[in-house]
Length: 405
Image: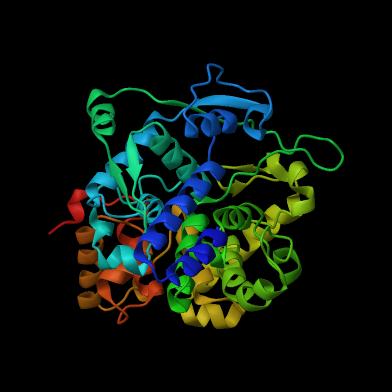
């Protein structure tokens, strides 16, 4: 969190080089101790040269917390591969950004968005990746350097693990969360597409403010946003990690993204206080509700947009007439096409030469997401026109060879 960064600042004020290095070593040892997911007593005894036999002391917080084993082989392989492919010169947070497909300025400057490991762990949270990374260090499959900016490198044991295709089993606290009434709370899965957009927004804001991404919002906050889809400041204020300052400064851009996504996909807000009751209503990122009024409302708004498209109105004209954002209208058109609506979209397409340029960008990036293609094309192209071309050429979200020249 922020404490090590603050302490690192004070260490930098020391004048003696040897004193600085000693202080950094001690700080890294304290951080390592705090991030353990194995018996803390064993760690302390080993530090003082003892070799305890019991794996579970029965007294520390780790040993007293009910835990369950899980297969961490795949995510461990992804982390080790990412460390190697980025040159073994970056820290855990940066490796997590690469694995999650972050659009951060630093990732782009290093050209790491072109690596095969980029975005291969989008479903993993910051905490997931941090826990496994720490475990790999604890098990000597990686080492973390000591200094102001610690970096990760893969050990000989780590290389052998990758080449030998060994398995790795780790443990974690059992996922049992109880509410104040004592009932086990159900976890509402986040909309992964929205989660990716929220992460990009967080990265952009962090870059603008020259701050680490986690200072804007932690991953848990973003996942809660992508699960519950808050549509008002009051709802947004209930998100974990949202205080009065962040509500005032950040609710605007995040609510705009969430509301546009929810409207484009016909999704209703899930109140945080009643998340358990609503968890069963969502399947594969789409709301399946018994509330006929919600279904009818979604169908009605899509049909209204469909009628205006058939009248040959532009996206901007439809947006103005319906008091919606143009991106919301574009999303509705995309959903109509995906649902099988027979629509003539020729009047919504950009001029032929621009369409060819956008098409070439999709083929060049090999990615149907809007952000990478817009990044490739530059500010001269809008998200809406890129999306229209995607709807026309890749309605199923898959780039197929026959569209190549």
